[in-house]
Image 1 (cartoon, rainbow, N blue to C red):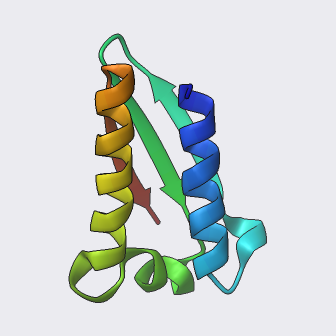
Image 2: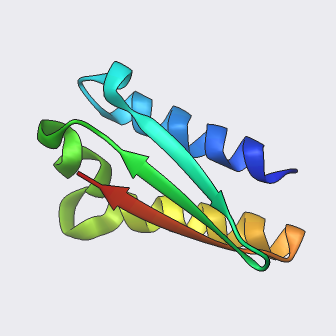
Length: 81
């Protein structure tokens, strides 16, 4: 599993959750030991990707953490407006 496929997984999850899938943008910033994945959605969809009490965002971060252990990298998900 490479970093690009994780970006695609986050993008697919986000597009499935929001009302405006065309406005979902996922950008990957590759560091030496850490990869930052920036997720942008339409303002009205922000609550949908964060979820009640942050559960959805936490679940996506858990997926990234588990996959990161396999490739020995740390993944950080940032949800931007």
